[in-house]
Structure formats: structure tokens, C-alpha cells
Length: 427
Image 1 (cartoon, one colour):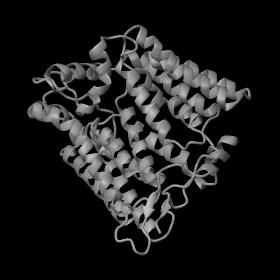
Image 2 (cartoon, one colour):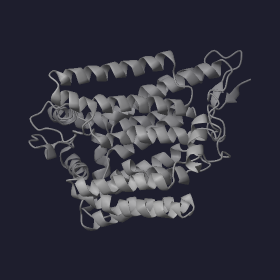
Image 3 (cartoon, helix red, strand yellow):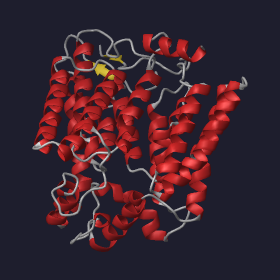
Image 4 (cartoon, one colour):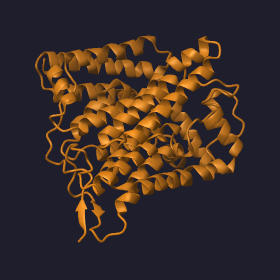
């Protein structure tokens, strides 16, 4: 007789894990925002820094006076996201990425490719994969306006994907904290192409942890059609599903004791003694195949329309192989090596390759047992990649940050990391 074994146990009755917060945290956020307002050369960043600094400072004062973390967090969030976002929409001011996405959507509708044929200056280049143009379609179809601005749709995609990826018991509190964090609040207000990628990666890993291989492949394939940074999530999800299949076939719960999942989620069917093949054994391959097919369906039509333009925009420009230089130049190790050390670009790429190899070996030798483990592994891999890429910037850190916070939010209440964090917050 066939039985069913869920990959993740029910989580709807979990207590929410402790959350970082406190007067010191909000004061640090206010300091960072104020520094950006004073020293940034970008107008949208200065507007965000001024508004966010007020919100964070008010949250710090409220917390110091004993007001509830919920109220302080709401005030911080209001100052860091809605206030600067509404002002920037009213004056039609946005980060360059927003205009690039809007232009790419118009090109996609008019010419079948989101890439200019002969880019010259950095502003001409669109370093994103064709799927990113989807967020510019409302503006391309209905014209510019506050409700068609691409940053609204990118932010909505991020928050929606992350909400579905979080445990069902308490989604609002982790969402508020993540959205109020400066690394996330800034792109939510000024425009951030990395946010929907991060949200879809979390959703894909969450679905893989629940045993929904096909749905996980769709989410990860959609993320992979937005930016190259999402591609490492596919092998991580495949390794998670493969490990879950082995655990299930051995008669052990596949979640490794991780928090409780939704018991209404589809279960992974196990065959009885007379069964010849287990569907769970094919879950990893199905996830990888669906992800690749989804990404190919969204990327190849535009790429094949003009292969030369595709390569120039999404391969050569990010790698610094064009005459125009990318503005992604934060002083991270890879950029410093490439800029100040003879042969440093080759050394940075070598370190990048070694890091990728080590993470791949870890997936083979010790695959992640839970979705949280998979997110932590992916966060580490992306952090190393961001550190050693010759052209990188601090904004890319939103990927490992969101993955790490999402992983922590899925941990059961007694997890040692959350106990330590809770003790620090309560002091």
C-alpha cells in the first residue's frame, strides 16, 4: 500500500523566531542612511538617506522609551520605504536600473529583443537577462506614471515571493524586518533589480523543501531568466531534493528536523515493498529540468533574435570586456585585486572559480538536508562570488542577506542561533 511522507512537517503552529531589533540597531541604520544622504553622488540615494534616517532615528527613540518593537519597526519601515518612494515617484526620480528596465521592455515589444544593437556608453547597456524586461511592460504598454513604474512591480514581486516562501504562521513580522533593513529598503525605494531575484530564489528553495519539485523549478527558472546571479540556486535546490529523496527512501523524515511545514502541502509518495520506482527519486531531475526549460523559454527567443547584442550586454559588459566600463565598482576584494594588482583580474577570477568549486564539492559530499541549510549554503556561495567578482558592488549583498534572514526565519524556536540572537536583543 502506498504511503505519503511530507518533506517538511507542519509549520502553521510555530511561534515566530526572535527578531533583531532595538535602539542600537535602529541607531546604526540611521547612521548608515545619514551617511548615504551626505556622501552619495546619486540624487535618489540622497533622498532615500534623508527620509530613512528620520524613520530609523524615530524608531530608535521609540525603542529607547520602551515602545513595542512592532510600533518602532512600523515607523522605521514607513521612513525607509513608503516616504522616499512616494517622493521619488512624485518627482520622477529613480536609479538608473529602473530606466534600463523600462527601456528594455519597450525594445522587446518593438524589436523582439530588450537590447540595443550598438551600445556605446554605460547607460546604453542592459546587463540583465531578458526576463527582467517583464517589470517594464506596464510602463511600455500604458506609458510612464506612478503606477507603471518598474520599481513598484519589482518590489511587489519580491515581497510576494518572499511572503509565500516564509512559514505560514507569522509572515508579516519577518517581512517587516527584512523590508526595513537598509540593504533592502534602499532598492525598494530607488529601484532594485536584485530584489525579485532574491525573492524567487527563496520561493524556489521553499518549494523544493516541501517536495514540490516542478513548482520549485518554475520559480528558479523564472529567477534564472532575470539575472545570472540566480543560476547557482538551481544546483542547490537539486542537491536538496536529491538528499530528501535519499532520506525518504531510507524511511527517515526528509526535513532533518527543521521547523514545521504546512501539512496541506502536497506530499511525496513512497511506494510500498512491491513498488519498482519512487517518484521522489526523480524529483531532483524534474526540478533541474523544469528550471532549465523555463529559463530557456524566457531567455532564448530574445537571445537568438540578436546573439551579438545579447553577448555584448549580458556577458561582455558585466565582465569588463567592452570599451564602456560598468559602474559596479564597490571596493570589494575582487575589484581591488583587478584594479591595483598586476594580473589581479586573473587572480580574482581564479579565486572566484575556486570558491565555486568548493561550494559545488560541498553540495556533492554533504548536500543540504533542509531548505534552511540550502539557503545558508547558497548565501555563502553568493557572498564569495560577490567578494571575488572583478566588477561588483555592495548592493549585490542583498542576495545573501535575504537568503540568510529567510533561513533564520524558518528555524524552529529552539534553534541555537535564534536563542543567542534572542538573548542579545533582550539585553
